[in-house]
Length: 259
Image 1 (tube, rainbow, N blue to C red):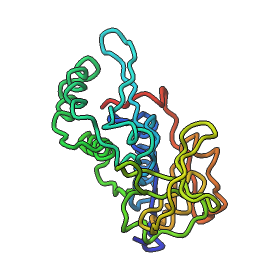
Image 2: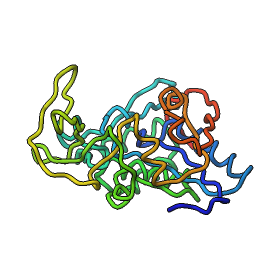
Image 3: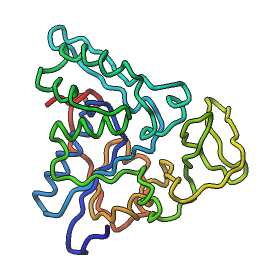
Image 4: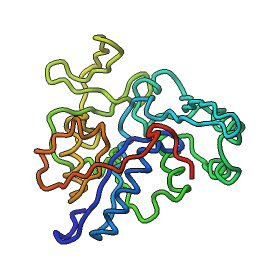
């Protein structure tokens, strides 16, 4: 996937962030398109669907008539999935789609509701990505998924990482501890220690602190569009070849983007 040295690769990264993307993701996309118009090259969306935090997919909507806000999130197939499974392995509860479709007309146009009525998947990350595509947000943008086992095999080694493994019949994202092995964080200082088992590079995804060099070893970008939160923790000195650009400012950044 390495581009020619002369060709800019403009990248932005984000977890699935709602079935309607949050406005900060739209701002990243618009910033990337603006930079592309200025310098050329191609745009890559690093879709970090290996994250497991269910709060990432909350969607904050506003009723068109009253202006009242409401948060809607997926309902997951079971508690183990909700708490421990990576987003690409979280399944949507069977009745969630139809129940949610009945609510959407009070928040958006009929045309936008029809976008969601055409999505046919029971997987959280796939649902979000398909919605973003059907809304036209990713036209001309390449998508790299952190869950792709073939891409994981090509990534660099990192010291701090998670391993996708199994627990109570589900795929879960366990933190690797060199002293204690695979562990699931169950809240506060409590952990569930998993039995020793074999695992391979195709099961590894990075932690927050190692995500940048891991991603860069796959994407080989020249420019990275960073959000306000990212700029506070990204260790930019680990990838001096990247030019970091703060995403364009946008109001109500955490609210859902509506076309």
